[in-house]
Length: 241
Length: 241
Image (cartoon, rainbow over the protein chains, first blue to last red):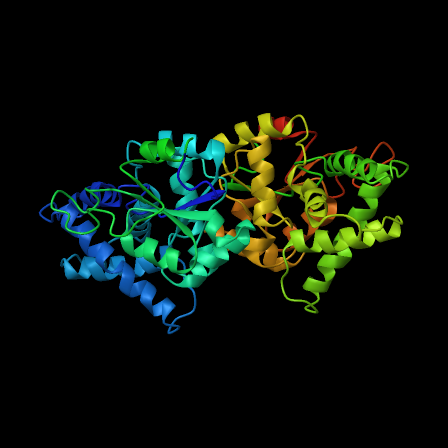
């Protein structure tokens, strides 16, 4: 008996679950920092610092203090602050180069099992990202890496950032499905807990190196998620794809 | 020299331009009408009657008399009226069967040149529908027919129906491009005229049989559109793809 037999659509967390954001950001940050005479800065520390400003920036939107603003804009604002924190003066750097680094989020690589797993999952399910990334970010990432999404969903389509219930429920509404017919696939227990609270089905995929070798969070499934897998290919096995 | 050298993204009208809606709707209407004892009704006349209610239904939204409502809902409401007009009592028909017929709009076939043309155009451009169809309708259509869209854009993402300027301009905004860097590809001069008014680039593709053998409208390019082609493959030639 396959897991999640009632599920018609799989929607995916992206940063960490589908792609390795930390090494991807570090790769392009290394190039950028070397070009601007700051090869001394650890690019993984830079990536971590940039990512650390992700949740607080979205919280401004979730709290209603700021109207919905797409992630490319939040990333760009955060980049200015992170550069300043590392003592890099952005004043002498061309806007084009800053925009290039900001678009590093569009150029993240999938984990090795991502594409072969998605191809199998797509044969039986509707598949789409349900990410806080904006449509262009996710579509450029998919085009570059060959991710076979059926549609690009997520925060911009729902006009709400996870873990707000609207992000999950409006996505189900766009899909014309009941929440139980939609499973969130994520490497993050918190994201899955919020999806479950809104009635969605859930699938956990372990990504033990998202935060590097010493990862301390999300090292295991913390609830009895509908499916628990070690890769997208393992998930395809468990879902009978 | 290729046409439209400044264009990065191609966005496509769908009903009539990408797919043959009239024969697709007639095919499933024929099955439905025969099953309910009304094989006497001409399924192409039925398709035309259903399509005729498309613009007035969207006009309720465009005028502000009704909040944005996705096309699946408008199609379903229009279906009830069309059935009544043809003297078919919907009372004895199960909701599932009516929903199946309504989803005929998700099952339309591409013109023979559509997929080979899109594959070539996609190699050089970002490609997405800019249709009044809702996301699910367009994504199901793409999944069934193998349309290689980079994202599903259009009325639901923009929350506005063509030919309102917001439908075109919000699509450019989602794409992070200036209007001139985005070309609307359409078989309809009116759609292209509205896109041009908003500053978008334009490409006309002739679809002489959209409305059947006696088609009287859109039989030629009525302005000097940025590119003028007889098929998606001809468009790929003209754009140097």
